[in-house]
Amino acid sequence: MRILFIAALVPVMLITIPFALGELFFSPASEHLSTVKMDGYRVALYRLNCGAPCSFEIAVNQERTLLPPLMLVRNIYTFDPAEEARYKVIGKDELRVSTLPYDDEYPKGQIKVFYLKPFF
Image 1 (cartoon, helix red, strand yellow):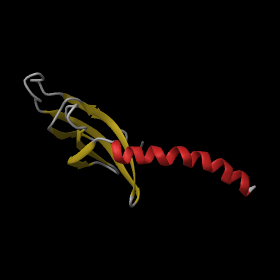
Image 2: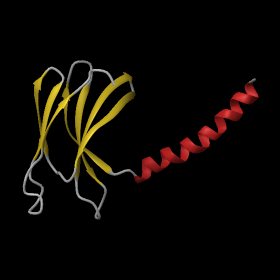
Image 3: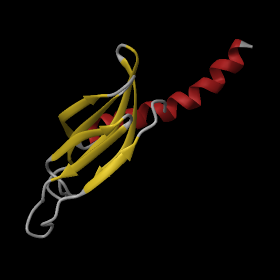
Image 4: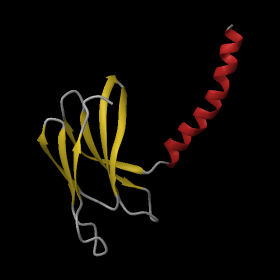
């Protein structure tokens, strides 16, 4: 029985380990901008920078700590292009995120209201 379990586990590890290493070395760099604590979870804003060929993006993530240091993270939305963002809590589990104008090509900011679920 144990041999069967190990044989089933090896292919999963052979796929998972290279994928995790790729995420570690090739994922876009992120800079934490701000965090707002909600009821049982938090929402964090990150500036993503994938380098010279890309524009900056703002990622809005919902995060919940399971057991430190394990955290469950769900990407809610990504503003592209955007460099700066602000948030305002407008109600229970409701958040408005607005971005500032990016450059002359994108002179308007973006605004989006999120209706969040306290569970994932």
